[in-house]
Image (cartoon, rainbow, N blue to C red; front, side, top):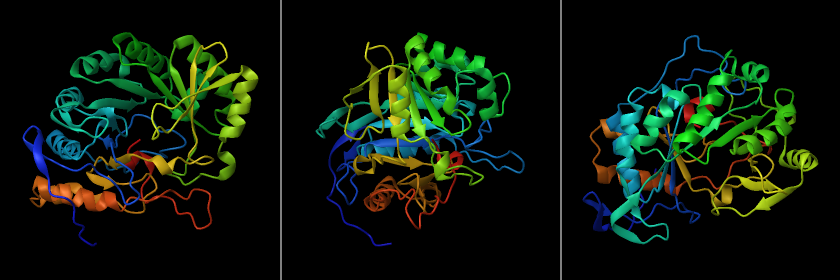
Length: 359
């Protein structure tokens, strides 16, 4: 892999670290968001993700290793960190990890201006919600800002059929309400739609958003499952979804919060409830992608659908200095893919499944 040259760092900004030029790829996209997977263990076996647990080998690094990676990436301009899994609430020491991450500061203001003291990291977490009722308040006190709950049905029977875990729905619902109560909001609910499994829940989710004051985001099913069962006809595409929601009650489109936002946002004509539609299959949003990912075993990935990942942790184990790791990260991020190729001739599924990449 060719070594790339970059401008020399200048003044200090992040806990004594030299100021770095913001991470950019070869298409000029600023990389500001990190998805950090802290475990690939999960207490669910969702039909669109994991097929079973027999013989599974799990990957987790020590907390200090994730923290070092985060510090280095923040010094390169990362502003947002979302903790993922697997199921991150299964991770031992998670609350303390959140506390330490919350104390880190970004090296840049949102407009790109370098700062002497830095701004707090925008720290969020995605969970299946099964343990959220118990952990929402400690996580909030530790410095977590927001939470997203993966929840693929709003009635117990369908929920159990998808997760393959009985009697969890009420626990998740309790966790959603607890998160809102302690200020981890606005709580977002992510629903992966699969034709024949939960597409009959669309209108019920619209009611749920209005009743519970949460943001429901529908996500098109992507080819990231363990048993390779994805087919184009299992995808409930954005156009069909919008037609269904408009029939339920007229939608009003909302402006995006940022160009890199993945969801198209809507409310209803009376202003009650909010719906997001994340449509990577029918309406890709790669042109404004600002994300990179670190897997639970310390691999750097530049796209969900990458065919390669890069062993950042391995370089750390071999004694790489922070400056050497920064140079390596820059080299990899510069080569970030322009876009994915879902549905195109010759498309290859990613080298890892979603549970091993991090949500």
